[in-house]
Length: 301
Image (cartoon, rainbow, N blue to C red; front, side):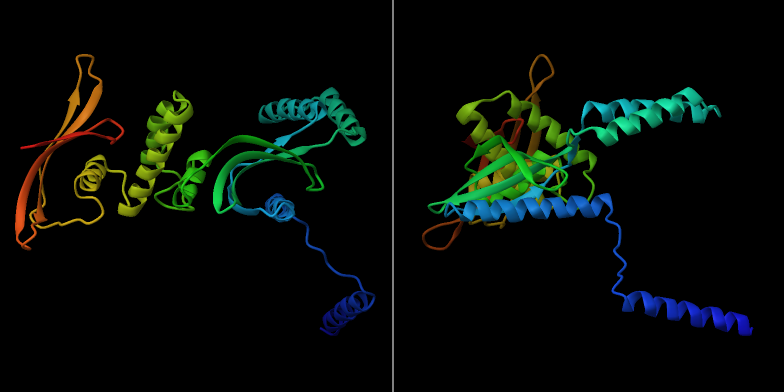
């Protein structure tokens, strides 16, 4: 018992001695810590660089990071993969172990740098106009920016940039910071395939509409097709000043061509509008939307 007390006293004394000598425990940074630090360095540096040009920079988010390694690293990865397969069979290859050790030495003496490629969406303000950029930022191991490769840029409504970021990084727009669900994956596939076939102004207009659909789905908290159709019919027919009195969807059909390809949605919609004398009038219309929920035409019934 006395010996145990002596050990505790000695340990406390040793800790006191170490701290009194100015020694500090420095926690080891995890890969996640390093990634967060690199992103913050990018934000700080780009903020500073744009400010020097009297421009305002705003970060909207980062996607998955990629590592660009020298060829020597890929050789080692391949050797480790062979070692793993052998271990699964309970086998050891001494020559393989020697090759791994030699390759480690090659990497140690390799002067080529590892670059980290950060997928980044940001906006820059010039003369009260915001331009949005999707870029790849190449950083070295010291977190120094080496290259900024612009993948895409354009004028996007600031209320839609968060949804543009979600689309570019394939992130959830219904449930922020949650896993992408199957409905959102299907949405990205359906709209994205059509978007990639477009160019110029057509692409810009369709992208804006797609982002608006995402924003609307986020607002009503669903990607249910019928719910979105009703919401867009309201927008097209009543605008932002809506009257839900006597509102009714009397019919909602999917229309297909002879090849069984969806061509449009046909909706028979009833709503009330206010007359000049404050009385209400019942309106019945037929609304046609294309497969992406864009307005095609309306008819009185």
